[in-house]
Image (tube, rainbow, N blue to C red; front, side, top):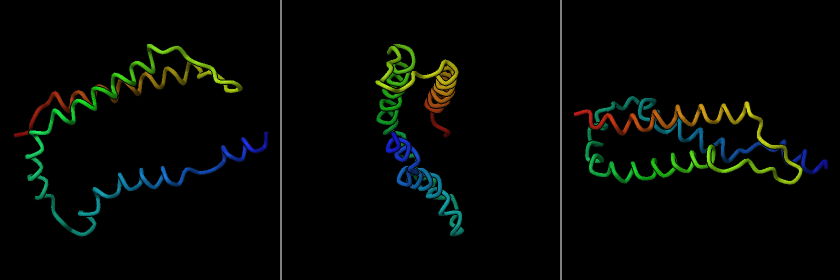
Length: 110
């Protein structure tokens, strides 16, 4: 019983490091006073747009399946997800899905 409590108190440093890296690396050019003129070279990525869209649609479908189609399963000794938590997950899912689809729907900024 105490082993489970101790495991739950461990801090996921690896995940925190990845999240921090993901957020900080795009800001590094600004810290070194490099301009954003290089961003115009990313227009060549427009041809790869479909390869970015397919995984996004896959994960939106996977999230929908997880939230709406699969029944809640109670693992042995673990409580089910509360209705409030499930509702919050669904709201965040729809916000993120709409934002992702709007990004693809807007097309290019040329």
